[in-house]
Structure formats: structure tokens, C-alpha cells
Image (cartoon, rainbow, N blue to C red; front, side, top):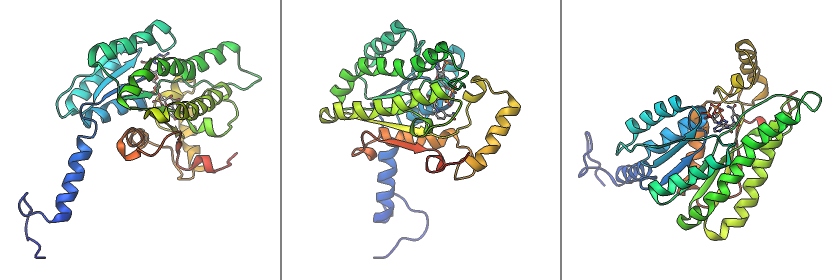
Amino acid sequence: MVKPVGPSTASTRSYSEELFFFVICIYLTMFCGKVVLITGASSGIGADTATEFSKLGANVVITGRNKDNLDKISKACVEISPNKLKPLILIADMNNENDVEKIIKATIATFEKLDILVNNAGILETGSIETTSLDQYDRVMNTNIRSSYHLTLLAIPYLIKTKGNIVNVSSVTGLRAFPNVLSYCMSKAAMDQFTRCVALEVALKGVRVNAVNPGVIRTGIHLKGGMDDKQYEEFLKKCAETHALGRPGEVKEVTSVIIFLASDAASNITGATLPVDGGRHAMCPR
Ligand SMILES: NC(=O)c1ccc[n+]([C@@H]2O[C@H](COP(=O)([O-])OP(=O)(O)OC[C@H]3O[C@@H](n4cnc5c(N)ncnc54)[C@H](OP(=O)(O)O)[C@@H]3O)[C@@H](O)[C@H]2O)c1
């Protein structure tokens, strides 16, 4: 076959070029017409997940407590969305049952369906069995797992209708034990088991349920969780030893995996808890 020379146009592209453009076009419109609900979308992993889904054509519902941040993320979503779709912003405290109910009601009232749920909202607090309190246990467990349990049970009838899927944002602390983050580790271990159990329960109804398990990712969560700037710098430096790849992860490295798990590219994956942690789950550093 004679290959055309010079810049290719639609009529002069080779078969492999045509295939490449076809695949790219499919990828870029992968989530067109889909409705994606992301909790904790006002910062960090959730915020980037919202803009990435917007970039791929989805209608996104973004939730959190910080209105200013949500407004900023909403603007970024509109700018990057191929059809300039505006997110539905829902100010909601995940620990308030009425707020959680309103998230589903408003999503369905606006878009009449739900395709993908990303349970991402979470907090980090430090404390061992000697220093923790029941208040801390309740705060962390309620925010990190009870609220996701609640939202998922309300969302599941709609996800069954669309044969949609769920991506839970867990942590390597769900897969492995770490000292001094007791309630956080427990909440993420519960998230992992929640992922597997629900995956089995709804598999034959066509709904997939998976989780990502990030290692240390540069977001604000550690500073919000009580570290000062100096401690945080030391903590990030230590990632050279605690993560096999020798560095902390970046937000984009998590969102790309969330997008993958939510996409048809992962159509045969359910019940998975996927480490996105630079190999940390495979190590035993002290
Ligand atoms: N960064 C890491 O190293 C890392 C590692 C493993 C797992 N993760 C997990 O990744 C997820 C996202 O964390 P991130 O690192 O992106 O941190 P982040 O920037 O602090 O994001 C946390 C998000 O959760 C929301 N949130 C917290 N409590 C809430 C509540 N009561 N009601 C509603 N929203 C609430 C926050 O929104 P508002 O402040 O607006 O309420 C924010 O949007 C969490 O589940 C975290 O456990 C993070």
C-alpha cells in the first residue's frame, strides 16, 4: 500500500490513522449524555474528577460545603466542557441526612437519571487507640463511610435503571494497617468491604462497583487533618522511602483511574479495590 506523504487529511489518512482518530473521538465523547455525581468536589481529587468528566462531555453534579470553591470548580467545568455544560452545584454536608437525600432528589429532578456515582468526600484525622476519642471515631466513620452508605442506598435504584456504576475513593489505608490513623484506616477498610459487597449484590442488575485506593496524594487533606506546613514537607519527603516509586502521587494520577473505572473500558471490572499508590501497598516500610 502506498502511504501518502505530508500532513494527512480525512481523505489521505491511512487505516491506522483513521482508527487512531476514531478511538480518540470515542474517548473524547465517552461520557456525553452521562450524568455523574461527585461528592467532595470542592477541592482535591473530587474537584479534578469533576473537571475531567466535564472535559469528556458529562453532565456533572458537584457537592461539598464550601460554596466559593464549588463556584470556582463549576466555572472550570463549563470552560473545559465541549458543550459548555454547567454543573449542578449542591451545597451539602454529608453528615446531614436531609442534605444527602436532597443530593439525590435534586440530581433526579434536574437530569432525570444518574449514570455514575463517585463517593469521594472524606476527612483525615490522626490518633491511635491511646489518643483517639469516640467523637473522632464518629466524625471520621460518619463522614467517610456512613454518608457514602446512605447516598449509595438512595442512588442505587437509579443506577440500576441506567446500568451505571460507582467508584468509591478509598485509600491504601483500607488495604494495609498504619499506626496513628486508626479511625481513618477503619473507615477506609469499611469502604473497601462496602465496595466488594455492593458489587456482588448489584452485579446481575448490570451495575459495577469499584474503588481506588490512593497512597499519599498532594491535596490539602493532610493540612486540614492537623499537620503544619513543616510536618507536611517532612511527610512528603518521607514518601521517597514509603512509596516504591519514591514520591507522593499527583491528583491527576488518581482521577485518570477513576475515569477508567467509570468507563466502558472497565466493563469487566467490578468489586475491585485498585491501589493508586506508587506501590505502597506492596511494601512494609517502618
Ligand atoms: N490526598 C491523599 O493523600 C489521599 C489518599 C488516600 C485517599 N484519599 C481520599 O480522597 C478523598 C478526597 O480527599 P482529597 O485528598 O481530595 O482531600 P480534600 O481536598 O480535603 O477533599 C475532601 C473533600 O471532601 C469534602 N468533605 C469533607 N467533609 C465533608 C462533609 N462533612 N460534607 C460534605 N463534603 C465534605 C470536602 O468538601 P468541603 O470542604 O467543601 O465540605 C472536599 O471537597 C477522601 O475520601 C480521602 O480520604 C486522599
